Length: 297
Ligand code: F6P
Image (cartoon, rainbow, N blue to C red; front, side):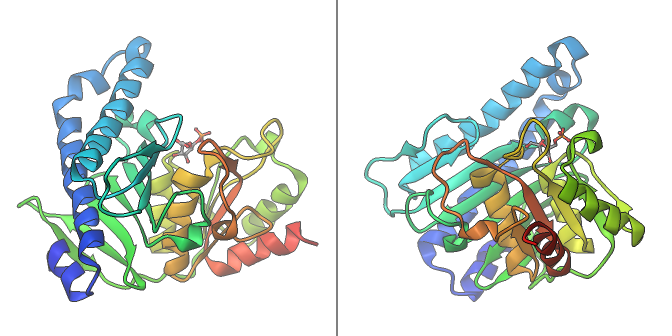
C-alpha cells in the first residue's frame, strides 16, 4: 500500500497527511542529492568537513524551502538554524522540528544517515509527548520511512517507482540483548558505568555506528537500547532534545519502548531552547526502567 493510501485508510487529518507527504517528497530530493554529490562526499580528508557542512546545509534548505512554500506549518525549528523560524500566513498552527541530516559525518564512508522530524500541534517548546506525529527517513542500502501516526509505528520502503510502500504496520520493539553506548568509556559517570557493566555481564552485544537514527532504527527492530549518556566534561549529554531525542523517543515509545534521560521520561520535559542537549537512554522498557532504578536510588 502506498503512503498516501495508508494515511487515507487511517483517516489521518488531511493537512497532517499533506505535511507527511511533503516530508516524504523532500526525502526523495535529498536521496537524489547524495547521488549528484558523489565527488564532494568522496573528497579528500582536508575538504571533508567543509563538504559535509555543505550537504547538511543543502538538505536543510531543501526542506525549509518546501515548508515555506507550502505554508503548512507555523513554526520550524531546525538543528541547522539558531532560532525557531516563523512562517507568516500559515494554514495551521503546527510546529515542526527537523534534523535534516543526522549522522552526516558518515556519508563519506557510506554508512546510513537519516532525516528526523517531529510534528507538534503548536510551537515546538512543549513536551514531546504532545507530538502529533514523528518520523525518520533512513538513507542506507534502502531508503525507508518509519513513522508514528494514528496510534502506531509503521515502516515504509522506497520502491523502484519512487513510491513509499508500507512494509510493516504496528511495529513493536522486541526483547533482545543489543546495546549501543555512546561517549568515551573513560569519561562515563559511575552510575552509567555500573549499568553498562551489568548489561555486558548479561551478554548484551555491542552495535554502534555513530548515526543516531540508524542505531535507534536497529534497536527498534531488534531490541535492546541506545544510550548517549551524561559524561565527564559534558554532564548535559551530547544529543539534542528537540531534534534527536524527542522524535525518536516518541517513535520508540509508541512501539512499546521508552525514552529517558536516566531519571525521567524525556517526553515529559518542556524544552526551553533550540540548543538544549540531554543524556538519552532509548529502547526496550525493561532496559530503560533499569537505568532509572539505578539513577533514582
Ligand atoms: O548528534 C550527532 C551524532 O552524529 C549522532 O547521530 C550520533 O549518535 C552521535 O552524534 C555520535 O557521536 P560520537 O561521534 O561522539 O560517537
